[in-house]
Image (tube, rainbow, N blue to C red; front, top):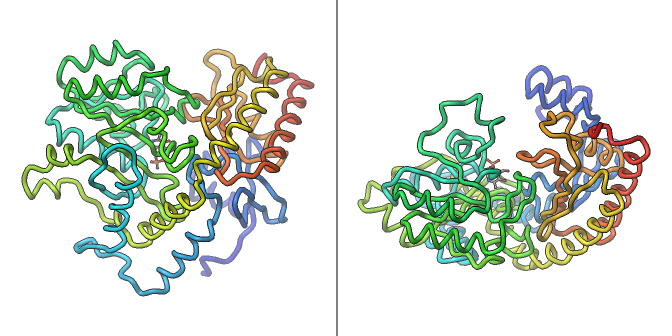
Length: 433
Ligand SMILES: Cc1ncc(COP(=O)(O)O)c(C=O)c1O
């Protein structure tokens, strides 16, 4: 069998139906979203007929540098050709050491140590364990509407009934506090048993929701006053997405723990990272064996670390956050203006940098399949735009292209969007009736 021999869309669907995530294949077919993409560069993706699509999703925030960033590709090819030990695990790795230092240098606050892993949720698991280990307390708080992943610990911090219910009992000791309610948070913290609050600076899967002004800084303060760690989940907001290298910079935050992933290696190699302060390290690592309480196999893998070292250097060289701020402001202003002409379809456009959400009108308690965003994504796909909804608020369409998106590509998106809106205006948005 030739594992890399090309196959066509029908065969891919057949194999996925029979051996993979059948539900996903059905869902793509139901909404005419299945395509066979064979090539991608920057913001562009091409199907087998060489039809061009624009990526306004970035694999949910993985592709801040775009598809196949040249510098990362080159460095990875060199690493593969070099005969470097790809994986040591029981010894030290050069690129892991360098990456740990670089991450601490660029991260907000006073990050001092790094634990490398393979995904966002794995980083969240490590953060939960680190908070419990350091504080010797058990309770982990998260925010209603927040999203931190789907492994059992991360899911326990993701208060979404749809995703939690089938897996109960979840990990004990998790509680959700109301969005934006500082008093509720402080009241809960005062009980004295909270190890940490895990929070996204901007809630991505919650529907691109910004916390009320001043909330994050105050939340950090009350956590600290009550002996709980302030854990910032920058998995989606990090690496320039919001118009700063890290979203913490918008709000003057200095967290105890930061979790990163998604764009960290420029999309090439799965990687996640847990960063923490010297104080947390001192609290957690009292004795030598404490350093071995949480480990993994693939964290620190040479290719992942080389990818991350070069991706970060490339993001710095391009000042990628400035691009996100500039293009984000352009997109947001235009999208808000467009939305004003279609109040019966879009109720709000909001966001920060290139993390933008368009909220569609909806019926209360509408099932996902009818919430409009899938029909909307279908119409956008028919107009050569790749997009998707946000997981916890599925009637919000995300607008999140790679941060290298060009003005002309934004203009192409506006045309596709206006055309889609006209389509729904003419035929009546089916999810509204
Ligand atoms: C804010 C946030 N945290 C955690 C995760 C989980 O990351 P992963 O899907 O890599 O497990 C995500 C994924 O979308 C996320 O957006």
